[in-house]
Image (tube, rainbow, N blue to C red; front, top):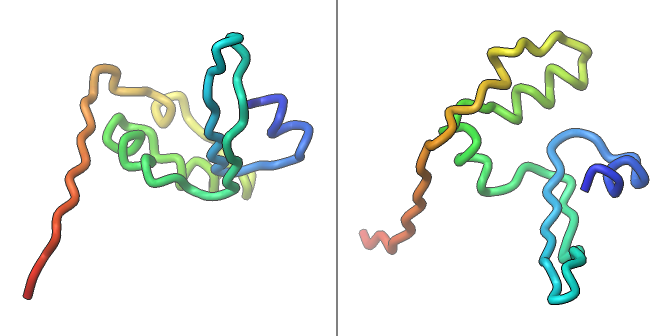
Length: 84
């Protein structure tokens, strides 16, 4: 993914979806130059990618504390219909 981002000269929050083929190579399914829906999982684990992207873009320092992951954080998403 890093090589793809570098060659396409992309920056910021990029979503790349891949699938591992039976041949053990990774196949690109899609590339989205936007914040992904699963960003909530990263936020819950202590990483605020939108803030980091803005800070990187405008040249602000990103501290080591902003990159500390709360390993072991569990994430679940529930969808349901709401009737009024």
